[in-house]
Length: 157
Image (tube, rainbow, N blue to C red; front, side, top):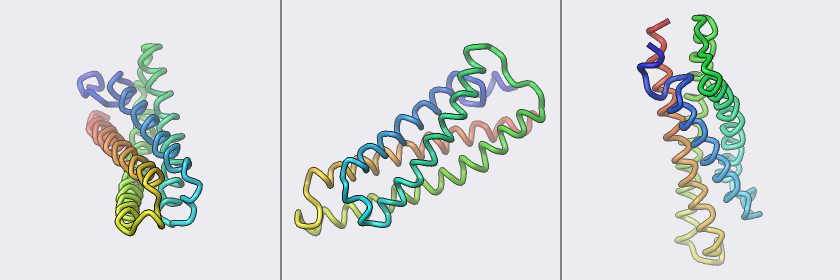
């Protein structure tokens, strides 16, 4: 059943989702940290913290997917699959909702600062913060999608 679910653990679609998560969460971190003033606002610090957790988690699961795809050795033991799927679902769901909250709060604070004027947020800095929030939204979307695909594998165990 595992080969029939696209995006599930051990497929090339899952690897692509994980690589997308790594790219978008790293881009969000990069653009947020380009502005040294990010630590002045709690929502920006929250985004950096959450994206700092999403990137290594996605990297570790991307390594599992890469091993499964390139070595052609899918984890067939139900216990191993159960641990990976439940761990991914719990951690990805938690990180997914945290990243959605961080992206929403960052977007709203950036919008508020941009409307307040350039004395609070210069246009270049605000555009970096907006881009960081957009990358966090994309990372959230991919994380949510991959956790749903892995949830569909659970009944096959």
